[in-house]
Length: 459
Image (cartoon, rainbow, N blue to C red; front, side, top):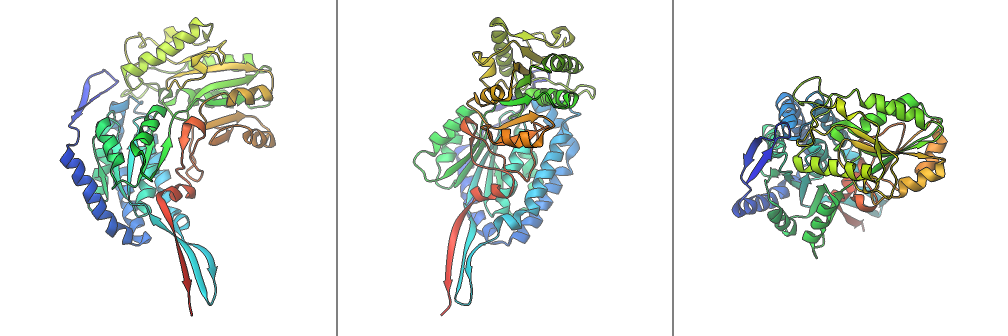
């Protein structure tokens, strides 16, 4: 049984039974049947129905926002942002699906009409995380359905209500029966579903270790997986930047959602010429946060998702301090952080280096390491000194420098004067242990279809 514990007060918020073997079998088989008719509907018909699905979900904002806050502890004042992200991404994919899914012409004349058609893969198994349960799942669900696939969604045990809310929205929009379904699953059954021949593709957002388990479950089957895994995203603050803008945005990029963002800022490298000024500004801005009950409107920093996560974050910070790191933030300001609950106060560590786990392993909490660098070459070397590569950013007034630096950084997305944001028109992808595959942009559809070539000759 799922027992979802709210990080607000560590009480049980919701209980759900895991799907039985017969329920899993019914979902797999019914998806197989439903997808045949769905793939034969026109793209125009699919777009109309999916637009209704999106609108149906968005119309339920009040309930969605409150249950999201209770499940993951994000401040309720910030939860509507996830609805806006859901809408922006969904509508981009709907509006650009004609272009993404159109046939590719090879040759067309009086004798030949040769083209490539993008056909659906079949049934897509989406395994979504708790930290952005709607923003991450929409990246997979909407383009999969638009491409003519069936979708089975498994949400994190921390956010079971999110899967149910999406399913109810699909029902209200009259999506065809069984074309979009969800399952509450334990790890063992999840592996069995992945290995089932009726699953044609897996999309997973989560940990590196989880990604490895996905690959193991696929085994010798000839299917692919899209994996968006860990991150330890860096930023370089150049001496010619707008320093106040950099401070404001990097503080937010470090602590939004209590630092529980795949593309959150975890490492900052600052030019020595402006280092002291940056540190002072970062400290002052951080100390303005209000750590508290996320259901209260004035709170802008809530608890982390569970006690286990809080313990890991505190441990990693403590180890770094024992090795010489220094927290520039006044911890006494954040009184709810008593070391025993999910309320972890923000911290920013200086005097850190890459010999520390703190600067190498993903923390996924409201903390960041800041290092002084003497030049761009040192910054690039340190930014690339990581097993991960989801996003990276530079803060500068020199556009040409930024573009040149971006070509030297091992990352999926490179920002100038921005961080922690997804443009639906750009490919969301990563390198190294951050994973494989692409979501968003017109390229995000390619992994959800198979190419079929038509060589038509008229005699």
